[in-house]
Image (tube, rainbow over the protein chains, first blue to last red):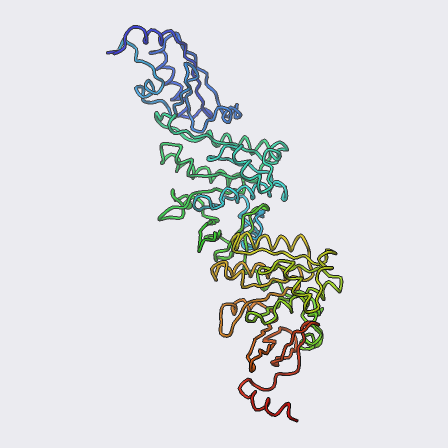
Length: 107
Length: 481
């Protein structure tokens, strides 16, 4: 299943994932995105991730600083390089590809 | 229906054209091709609003980064970072990098609304610029989302009563590439930059202005170090000569043809004639006379340098040098074709505003006419003439006009006075004949007169009673007796 077994996989397995999800209020899209993100992380990044949800309605200045336009926006802050995914994260496979997460071997 | 409220755009000329400015509290679409001045117009709207009309504004740039934008408009004298520090404007560059964005599922552009609302609230903005919509389309993968969000955005701008300028690229089959005009129905302005006969012209047209009368023609506009100036030629005619004061021509015998008093102060005089008919000499008399009265004269000399001119005029008894030295006379010599008509005309108007002359002379007008297309030149000239009239400068325009040349006739219609000088052969010699073709508002002599130039200057003689064809018999009669 994995072409690269061994080193690369184990490296990424040790990395810690720092994710930030930008939303604007409790909209359907926001709620869906939060749910989807929590589920995907729990399944594929167990124990090595942190998620920070930022509500732009409360901290609007962060929208400028982090160049957020679309909502929801998920930013992978670590591991580098920074990656951005926009949308409610409803397609797990595409989220994994977008974040560069190798699907968990268990499946 | 209630009349639409307007807010001054701060763009010189545009507010006259639209009867007061852009729709207040609503978005205006400004579209045109690349490099046509959209961003400059939008920036002018924002900066002038903040400085002159007490309306702070937010600039949302989807194109240029803020330092680049600031540098580009610095040439117009706009200090964006200074204004931003004073809280008069807010600048936000929305970075759109499509390559680095991955799309998964549904989203909206609420981030833009949050940023806009935050900036508007922070400085109490009354104006907004979005530049340009096309970059937003280019940066967001899902066009359908951009469309629906734009609709929401324009409604939001209206709800918050923000007077806005939104820029967009010109499309091939529609006004804008993404048909943004469907969302902005109040006011649409099209800019155009074209090169005709190697000279560049910028045009502005108000395509649509709901609930308001507006000029629908194309109007030339200039971009120079003072920003954008639209030249609404139709405002001509509003500027009428205000006074009944008269200004001497500098030639007593010519004054005699104008009720003994000369031209009306603030009027425009066209002096037409072939090469070597003494047009410049008549003009020099006029300048000299103004300086003698202690008035200021501005002379645009397109064919002679100041030194050539003073030298030539000294031979007919007019000494311009003391006036030049004393500062009452300024001579501006440059060939219009070197810089193109548009900047040249702008420079002329600026000279007029700087020097504040009582009398202006353009010698010759035909030099301007030959440097652009006829239609284009006319618009520019109307603007210059209009400007001189508005500020009460008496202006004399010489022009090369031979026989049946119709070129300048269109210009003559807006002149108050039209004098024509012709050379007619008489034996081996040439006789100059002068005629006042028209002079509005006075009973002038329309007789054909002989004009002579000697070392004491120009003189207009008695009526030229005998037509050229009957010259010979008279000549035979002459000397023997």
